[in-house]
Length: 160
View (cartoon, rainbow, N blue to C red):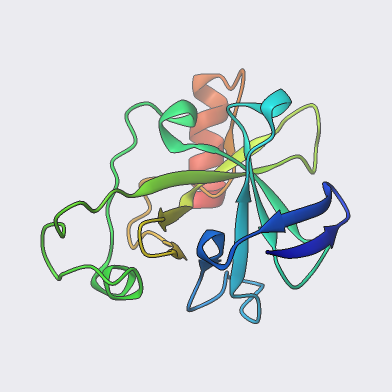
């Protein structure tokens, strides 16, 4: 059993099979390839993507369906390749976990990245941050209380 000392969670013990490899890294963190998905009972349904190499690097995530119940999941051919999936359809037994990275840069107005959700294929230990090719979703989707006019301004500013 391996262990890492993290800034947020203290010591985490894990098996090699629990590591999720991001072959392309994450945008802005291309050199980071190995992460653990940490679930803390007191924080359910939130999850944390913790870097294996960088003790202070972790991302707060939420299931995409919780953030946007009607979110339409779509993977590019390149993302399917990174997840070791066939070009079309799904391999038998394949289950993908879709997560939105949450941002708390303004604690009174947290946001979720729906433009680039994390897609995990835990059965083979692979993940990708799947940047959508359309402008249907935003990288800074408000989690609470946005009005229709706020939505329109945000779409024009962030998604155009």
